[in-house]
Amino acid sequence: MRAAAAHAADWAAFACAAQALGVGAALLERTVAYVGTRTQFGSPVGAFQAVKHRLADIRTGLEFARPLVHGAAVALAAGAPTAAAEVAAAKSSACDAAYAAARAALQSHGAIGYTSEYDLSLWIGKARALRSAWGSPVDCRARALDLFSE
Image (cartoon, rainbow, N blue to C red; front, side, top):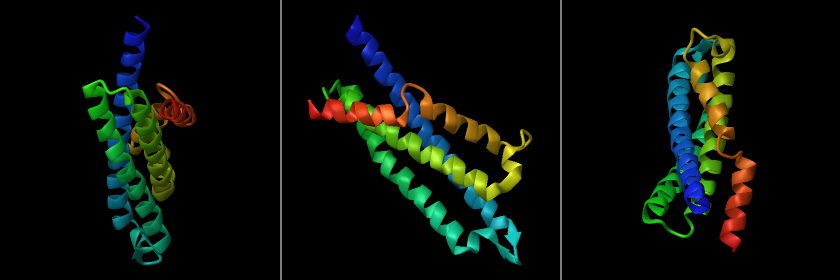
């Protein structure tokens, strides 16, 4: 019974990781589109080097999380003994990347990101909720280290 509950928790954590990856990608996509149209000092905000670097860092975080999420899916489906650790690593990475995307999106959009009329606030809320669901990134990192070191 306990193994079945742990297995179900792994699937739930995996679902959070996969959803976080999608939320992060959606946030990045919306932010890139927005900074391409918003102008400041006569130039699109997206033309500024600092904005480009921040969004590139977000993209890098999401791309590093993607193979971890895919690997966790394969491990879970195969019933691999390392599945729990792989899920924990995937969730930590994907949720960190999604949360960073949410923070960058909010900063890039400015005050409009806080308004409920603009759908960005929904995406940011999802990123925040997924980050703590089925274990925080800190808990997941510790779990992955403990399980991989056994």
